[in-house]
Amino acid sequence: MNASASEHTVDEIRSLVDGIVSYKLDESGSSDIQDWIDGPVTNGAGTSSEWYAITIAQYGSYDMSSYRDALERYAENTNVSSATGREKLALALIASGSTNEYISRTIDDSIDQLGLMSWIYGLHLLNNGFTGNLYDTDIVVNELLSSQFEDGGWAIMGKYGDIDVTAMTITALAPHAERQDVYDAVERGFDFLSSQQNDDGGYTSFGTDNPESAAQVLLALSSMGVDCQSDERFIKNGNTVIDGILKFRNADGSFCHTLGGPQNESATVQAMYSLVSYIRMSEGKSPLYVMDDHTGDGKKPVQDKNSDINDKPRNTDSSEVTVSETDASGDEKNQESVRSTTAKTEKTSPTTVSSSVTLVSSSYQSTLATVNTTSLNFTAKTSTNTTFRTNSIVTSAITPNTGSGGYKGIAMLITCGAAVLISAVLFAAGKRHPKNFIAVGAVAVGVVAFIHFTDIQSASDYYNGTSTVKTDSVGTVTLSIRCDTIKDKADSEYIPEDGTILDVTSFDIEEGDTVYDILNEAAQVYGIQVENSGSAGNAHGMVYISAINYLYEMQYGELSGWIYHVNGVSPSVNCGEYILKDGDEIEWLYTCELGYDLEEE
Image (tube, rainbow, N blue to C red; front, side):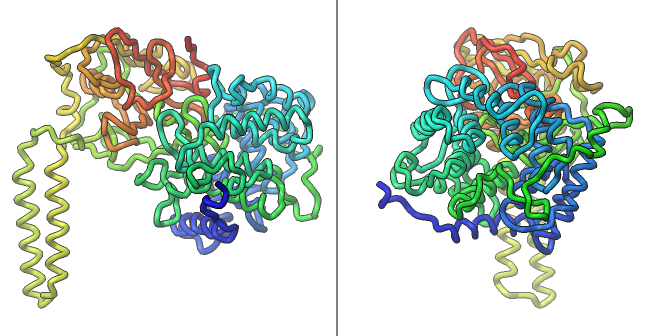
């Protein structure tokens, strides 16, 4: 089996990492890695660049001082509400060579504050030699061991293991594998992860084949010194975990979340740090999260007991900024695990022209969604201006062609006329090479195809307030949309006082209708903004709801976003794949803690 597996050399994997770096340099206009660190990475300190900073620091020898200083200032002046968000900042401080007291303070004020994830990332801080007054490594390790399920996995919710959370737990436990109980638990965890691996070497989480889950597994294996290219447990049909990640690589060096999809920031950074972890293992270095010396004095970081920041309590100044982090501990899951890393969620109004970017790096992205409405009798805010938003469902002016749209014929004629005019100008100017006319014709054909297959509507046309007549109804379901978890956290016109965006409402269903179909219908009838950054509006397949009622994923904490329940339970499939039956009760709920703050049967 080992002989049949394709082998990727360390040099090849290093070139893949360098390809990601080149992509980021081109994207940011940086001349080299140091320029990138001193510019975009430093500018994003505390808000968007922590996982890149950690990865860069562990990949080579670079001057991280500008980033470190910026991150220390951010930590000093910012109240980070999420426990795992504080732990992420503390880990990045360690990676950049800081010995700031913020690190040890975070150990005390964050562990056990946000369920399993806060234990996992708290252990990473302890693994780097920092200590607090309330927790030590034995306490945290024992807590993680006691949380393992019978199937060998770990998860934030439920009774069965989750791929990402299991891998993340193993990564944290790896430095303690000399303990027999830890080693045994890790081996059971590996058996679980092996049983979940696909034939192509990758992993599917919540119905979605994605690189982030595979990246977390590669990180866990490498942290334990297990080579996925030689351990037969992780070679399936001749494919390794690395193969499962690389199939999502784009030509420009970045990575996508779904096959054939656009660049995804979460997928890119997780692919990068998992590949770096493999390189470090191959070179006999420490696991990715056990930091090299970055203090410049050849010593491991030591806590600075005289740090200025220790004298500044949190929330002491009314001018202090309260921040909702944009990435979930580097491995964002939208539901039960964490995966959205270093990307910022784009927020736009209904009249903004922009494109939507999925930043969720979690396998649970398929179950998250975002919906916007202020009440059952919500009146849609309309505008005479047409709104364009790529892959947006309700705010978008681009919807599947329904045969309407009298503008189409005129638009096509104008396009063809423009093509003829441009060709005439080229001919008159003496630019008569056939390739010029072929290019003009190709562009014209593309525009005509776009016009034919889309229907541009104003907001008032789309929010028609009319229920779909279903002559072949097979039953009735109910749908409600709530954001109770944030109703007291912010003053926003999009957050109803009672947290109810849409009260329990009945909808007829036809054979094959999905949760996504009903959400989309509710959006049109009641004027609720819904943003799908998945499969370009396809109701059956990869759907990822990134916003509802202009309440976005990660807007209220790095673990925040939309989750759907059916009959009180969070399903393990994408909302575009969940087929409804008569009597089903659908709830879309906004969570601040990956569903940990929601009641589930």
